[in-house]
Length: 268
Ligand SMILES: NC(=O)c1ccc[n+]([C@@H]2O[C@H](COP(=O)([O-])OP(=O)(O)OC[C@H]3O[C@@H](n4cnc5c(N)ncnc54)[C@H](O)[C@@H]3O)[C@@H](O)[C@H]2O)c1
Image (cartoon, rainbow, N blue to C red; front, side, top):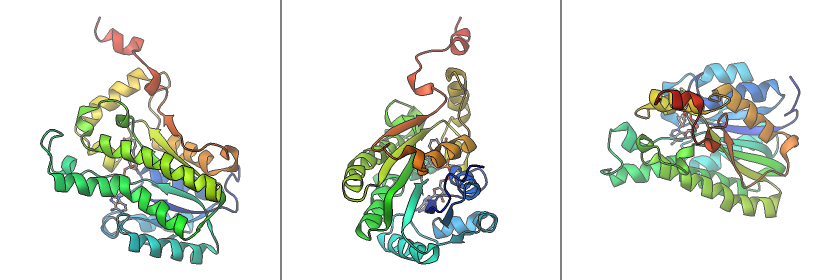
C-alpha cells in the first residue's frame, strides 16, 4: 500500500457488516496507515459484527445514534481522547428510510416515518458537522465525506423518500462546506456511488433491476464497495486538498449516459 493516510486520525460511521461501504473503507484506511474510531447506532452494533472489524483494524468502537447531538458530542470528545488529538477525516455512511422499510409508497407515506428517515439520512450529517465545528475538532486540511446516490438528481421511483433525503444531504455538504472551508480549511464532499449490494442497498425495492440496468448503461460497469472505499481514501488523502463543495460521481460513467449499445440491444 501507499501510506496515503499515514499519521491521520478519523471517525468512520456506518460499518454494519463486511458488505458495508464503511467496512471496506475502514479496512482500506487501516492499510493506508490511518488510526480511527468506528461508530454506529447502539442497536446496529448489537445486530452486526463490528467487533470483528475493530479487532482487524485496531480501532475502538464508540456507539452513537447519529440523530442525537448528545451522542455525537460524546463521540467526538472521546475520539479525540482515544486518538490523541484533532480529527483529519470523517466518513458519514448512514442511510435509512422508514417508509421503505415499512413498504409505504412515495405517494402515500407516513410523515412521521419521513421525518425519522430524514433525520437519520440527511440531518445527521449537519448534526455531525455542527459538533465537529463547534468543538473545533477538525485539523486544517481535514476531509469530510458523506455517501449519496444519483436519485438526488434523477427519478428512481422505488428509491422513495431517500431521493429527497439525498438531495438535502448534498445541499448540506455545500452549505456547511463553505463555513468549514472558510474557517478551518476543511473540505466537505459527497460521493455518489453506484448501486451496491449492502443491507441499505438491497433494502430498496427493485434493487436487482436497477443495479443490472446501471451495469449495462455504464461504460465501466458499476463501482463496487471496495472501489468506493478506494475513492474515499483518495478524498481523505493530501492528494485532493482543494476539492470541496462537490458531489462526486463514482458510478462507472452512468450519470452522464443517455443510452448504451447494451441497453439498446434489448429494445431492437
Ligand atoms: N448500497 C447502495 O446501493 C448505495 C448507493 C449509493 C449510496 N449509498 C449510501 O452509502 C451509505 C452506506 O450504506 P451501505 O450501502 O454501506 O449500507 P449499510 O446498510 O451497510 O450501511 C448503512 C448504515 O447506516 C447506519 N445507521 C442507520 N441508522 C443510524 C443511526 N441512527 N445512527 C448511526 N448510524 C445509523 C446503519 O447501522 C448502517 O451501518 C448510505 O448513506 C447509503 O445511502 C448506498
